[in-house]
Image 1 (tube, rainbow, N blue to C red):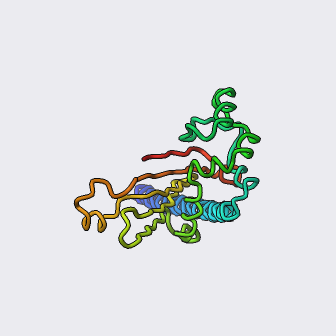
Image 2: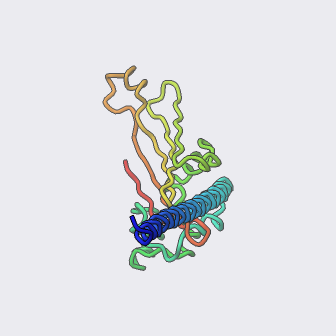
Image 3: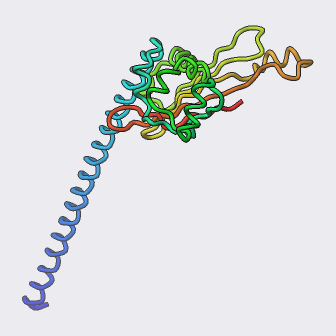
Length: 215
């Protein structure tokens, strides 16, 4: 092999080595960038979860106090009755609601809050907050609990479920399997029911999305 050919081969070898090193450096840079973006996303999600927990704790205090002035802040008015399983609350409320095309104003909501509270069994929201530890949502997306009373046909259940920016509060009653087993002669042992309230974290606070009633 002459010196010129040897020199060309040497240049090619050096060039290939530099290309590999460059590629490795680029891959390393991309990997570091991806890790940095993942860390930012994790931090953002953690911050959002902390904010959601704080908002739920505020909601808890509002329902403990049954403070309509705080509770109404979770709703955007006018509120469409299609977002709630609403039928007959009281005569005056229903007349005004229907006259307004199914829209509920803030004034109408506040004026009739006690009847709305009873109609939707909102006391169940207060019971739910007592049944679960909201702080545990920092590491979980679902909390649930059941309350069974000996020799009663119904038991109460409570669920808090987080899905992205939304949180659902579920509560209701179901037939107690032990009671049903002990009373096979009874066709129905419990008037089963369930309610779900869905809220979304928007602008740093929880906003009502929809209520669903079953049973």
